[in-house]
Length: 261
Image (cartoon, rainbow, N blue to C red; front, side, top):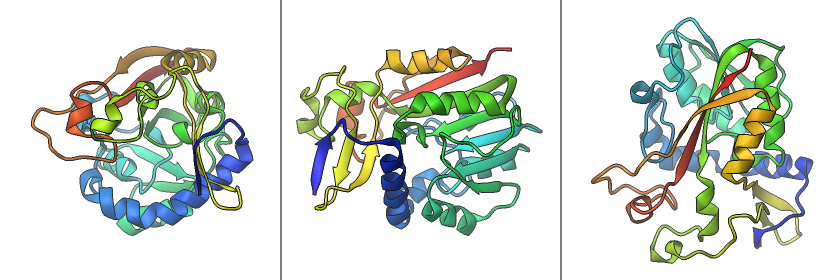
């Protein structure tokens, strides 16, 4: 297996790789993180910020909400419990299988690619994504444009992703993950390839400036950028999200955007 930063992954190759990865990893992912995510809860990030407390989406009751890259649709299930009308989509059939297992009351589930949304213009009041889809496409600017297309004017788009500062450090939650190894300005994606050279996983890096430029170019106004702190006394870890690293630099960035009328 070949693992590392690689500039030569195309959009269709990334789609195939990430669909296959999440299909194959869905059971293990839900087994490992399902208790933290809950069956019907909206957790924005490994730092544990919840929509019930943050209210980044504003009023959701009666609103049509699109969940982008929903996984097992825990967030969509929470939204339905708040009186919203969520549509949750994911690229992975394996993740959607877990969404159906947990229950679909009040939720419409769709398998779709975030760069090609199968929804009519102006179909939704709100859109959200908790670590879904945005980091796993080669053209996240296209995702911003697609979300803008399906939102009504004035609609809010809130999404979380790994904080881009994390890309300069090794993917290590211990002391080895505190030493800078990469340039922040190296946009090469992280790609895993099998012995035949076929990509099996791909994740893209964008700087904060890149991300803001994508948001603005799609017609949104960025109204807030949150960098949640690691909770005091929290000893739980999530991959490279650990108390050691969380005390020193952010692991998550949450972007709150509103579509200009």
